[in-house]
Image 1 (cartoon, helix red, strand yellow):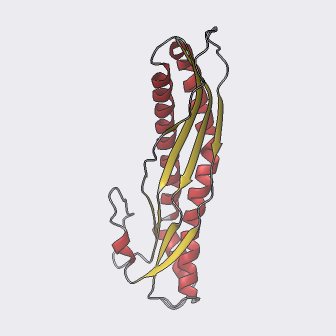
Image 2 (tube, helix red, strand yellow; image 1 turned 90 degrees about the vertical axis):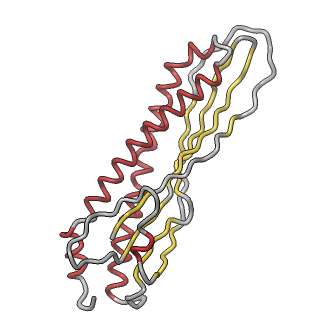
Image 3 (tube, rainbow, N blue to C red; image 1 turned 180 degrees about the horizontal axis):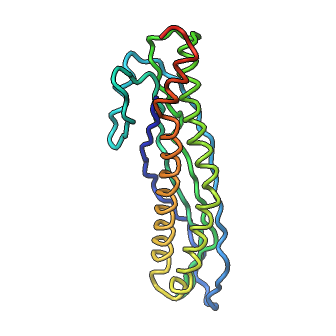
Length: 214
């Protein structure tokens, strides 16, 4: 039973700007909002689960001799954002950053069709994979405040330089993207470690012990 994550890169959406008006450059705290929309889950019986474990970048835990992969959770995490700001003569200010942490829907759980639907083995495999699904969901939700803090801090550090630069929007955009990349890496390392703690020989044996017929 494995958990697999593949990244999707979302296009960046920049909000329109307010027409230029001659006035002092306002510097205000940027509002940062993070949402984590829920993705549906699809359970898919397949003849060979291992055939779905070879996506680019996929890491499959080492299996003991004689063991086979009976379940696999595959998700595609994505981090999207939108900036809303204003532009004045010689000035750019960032009023709001909207961040979306999501998984492409549906999250796919592949299970071996060797086991009859509703059988003890099939339900045990699915239950294990659903724990991986929850690890992904909880990990994303738990890291939402971290994304917010990272981006807010990065914007504060770049705001003064950006406000007086003709490239202010690009400066803040780069600061936001760097902060998101760093937070995303931290999140996925934490989620990966949690999944690895699930995928151990000891846990596989506990799952196997739940049923007599494998």
